[in-house]
Amino acid sequence: MAFQAKKLINNPDDVVTEFIEGLVETYPGLQYLDGFPQVKVVLRADVSSATNDKVAVISGGGSGHEPAHAGYVGEGMLTAAICGDVFASPPVDSILAGIRAVTGPMGCLLIVKNYTGDRLNFGLAAEQAKVEGYKVETVIVGDDCALPPPRGIAGRRGLAGTILVHKVAGAAAAAGLPLAKVAAEAKHASELVGTMGVGLTVCTLPGQVTSDRLGPGKIELGLGIHGEPGAAVADLQPVDVVVSHVLNQILSTETNYVPITRGGRVILMVNGLGGTPLMELMIAAGKAVPRLQLEHGLAVDRVYTGTFMTSLDMAGFSISIMRADPPILERLDASTKAPSWPVGVDGVHPPTKIPIPVPPSPSAKGDERRPLQLSEQGQVLEIAIETAANVILDLKDSLNDWDSKVGDGDCGSTMYRGAKAILEDIKNYPLNDAAETVNEIGSTIRRAMGGTSGIIYTIFCKAAYTQLKPSSGSVVTPKQWAEALAASIAAVSKYGGASAGYRTLLDALLPASSVLQEKLNAGEDPITAFVLSSEAALTGAELTKKMQAQAGRSTYVSSELLSTVPDPGAMAVATWYRAAALAVQQKYKS
Image (cartoon, rainbow, N blue to C red):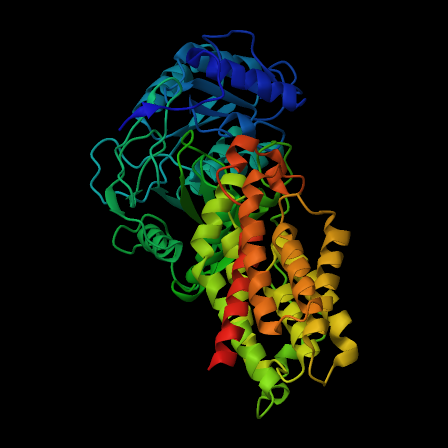
């Protein structure tokens, strides 16, 4: 069902002019021509037609592709960018205004993406500028590799590879080359690059409803940057598969879109289409490089990953592959003040990973730490640990669901990582030594779990180990276990800053510890005391629904929402504590 999209805008008709106003306020090296709303031109603040002694490099097109094209205005890249309305080619008068504003005796190069509207409007503006006496050359960029030939008169669409052409041309112009040579370098660069896009969602134009063209679990392959449908619709696949398909399409020997063959060197650009997290783009880049190397026999000289040319808020990405001729690399590495060109990517790559300079964890030493025969205490510890860890694996989705309402939604995933690692490492734990086993659990958690929960549980285990260490090698008494639990709680409270009633895992642990000590002091059977304390832990966790959070991310959540779910951390600790207690009870019954 279509629905009105949420946008941080005012009048939809003003989004381009207001974008330009914000852009030039942000970057002091940029200005715009005072011709709103008809003329929307961003230009270098240090260049005018009267002072420019180099070739002006001008590009542009419809808006909605930010940071393209205005974000690439700056010394060493574009001299001016002509902005049309959203997904609409800029009018001839606006393009002419830009040419007149920045073009000096050396002339100007127009870099135009291959769309009919852009070709017509920039073409007419170029002809008019020539009539007025300006030297003008035009380079059309069509780097799309999604559609097989023939393509009629439309040709290949201009996509994110255009940004690389901007950089080559801008660097050539900054080097003082004449117009013909700047144009030749730009044209040559445009012939070396191929691009293909993948969309996960449909973009939404300001003030319009969001299309439901793509169903759940579907992606579009080979789409443009104006919301038009892709060449094909496919099922969502792991990014490995999607990246492999895109690379195969770009480098296809059947279409021969780019003159790249095995043994060559290339430049890789992974471009977000507007709604894709940088994390996902980096994952795609990390998978693309080894595939280019191993499957296609190519050396990757540069990798540009980020948001370079978008389609408003579309989730998805495009990949561009360019042949890395030495002159091209020189132009790409040349300095620029364009605010949206990536920095820190030039130069030779050192090894991507180096060894960690720390000694290995004791739990990595091998099976010699595992007792050949478990004592009674060792058997009890083993079943308690395994049962507690397994119940956390089963609770993953519930914990994530609760945490999505009152936190950041990853409590279950974090606990799952810790529990899974414990189950893997338990084969190396010295289970006949309770103190050392607790210490090893802490080491496992510290290595594998991560997040705030990971450090809290590590502190919990280390404090328990410190309390139990004097009894290392001997059987730990129920009273000593109770004292270790109390010490762990005290340490977590000390370093985490939480106390009873703060809506944290302590609200499960504190009543459990209190009941355990009370029952043991009253002479209760230790197993019964353990089980009763686990009931207190569950009750305490459920009661967190009635508490106002005073620690963690839940402090930013309204009390009305908090009252609908228990604290995920408290439920996690109460659940594994309860499971361990019941497992120990069952062990002794049998």
